[in-house]
Image 1 (tube, chains in turn green, blue):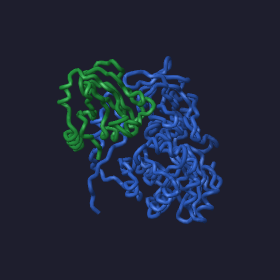
Image 2 (cartoon, helix red, strand yellow):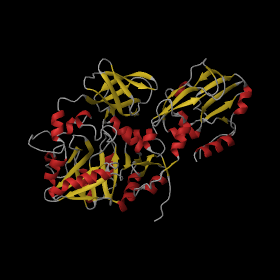
Image 3 (cartoon, rainbow over the protein chains, first blue to last red):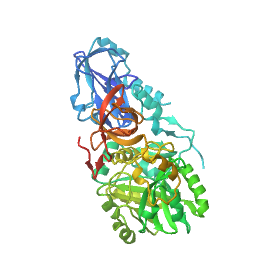
Image 4 (cartoon, rainbow over the protein chains, first blue to last red):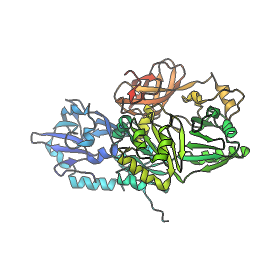
Length: 131
Length: 398
């Protein structure tokens, strides 16, 4: 069974969000997503300074099996992206919620996060998607 | 025996076209419910125990990987890995006129096989010169040749072979009673030999490349589909599991079909149904070297069609290495400046080179560069002569 840590929020497009106290949030893809994709070989993260609206395709993760878009979970500006993924895309497979984080955004509106799924709702969503 | 529904993932649909990729689509493919009952090899339960992720391949439930297809690929290039290839079709041809039959059936020249156990890679053509399948044939005795054909083409191949064999009174016996395990890598032979008892060991250890030997019920061939040294071992189904476990104890790691595909592509080996099919000639599929033109008096199925094409083909199969980041996919368009258009046949990623590689069918005038359309952009690719990797090392200047 895929893990979905309780302290994180999730989207229906399989991104996870970690909200920080300073109004920023880290974003990556879930364990369920990395499992479906298989070994990742390329990651295209959004450039720092880019303005994102919620739901925009802003990154690409690519495995031997498939290329998949990653969508901005919330509106904001990209303040950092994970440079180590360039040489080590497999970090997303090995540690999707930790070292496999993809980018960080400064949220336009912290309250937007309330629309995201919690761990339990995300797990239920994944289960329903496969039937 | 009760039939039960099962879940499978159709391999051809994993490769999502750019722009339509999403994890959600992968989820729904992952649990696709098939209406067909998939076949299982004798190693099915062992694959599950070892963490194999099973998918549908040509109607068989086969492991796509055991956790990481990249690690499995590197394992074969640097040490030893094993593949369950029991889904492939083993056919024994028997009679007094088998050689005469194969001279007619195969595009390559079976008279190259003069020593016992020698193997031949050949295409089997239709009258139009299109490829029905590619295969390996082993000369064991004048009255017995063994042939291995693909899993996906089993039914049509058997029907074709049986039909053509009638005129030569050759017996065509499929061997579903045999399983097959491929052990591949620089340490594959040593590790496989360490599992064999004296009689088989003596027969196997002296095998030269592209030769086979039989000892008792076990048939060992020094052949493979990875570009590495190793064996393909055919043995009774009830002995397959104990061999697999013995190989595992000897340090051979289980590897799935995902790694098998990246390995064969790096080695420049064609995949039937993807790089060539009944509508393509071997001459436009990088397989001209497998045609036995001499002696000119040898009539074989498709010869006349090939003679007419010779020197007049418009397309050829080449290797591509992508200079940018990105993974190449089957069917991506190729543009050759001032010359014309082509298409990728097999596109993937080379774990050994760390970049995308492909086989592509392009106009014959193509020289050393072209462009490939990937996710809406034309990216530069270098044209190379396969293989991309040999003996674990790159053959290409990157």
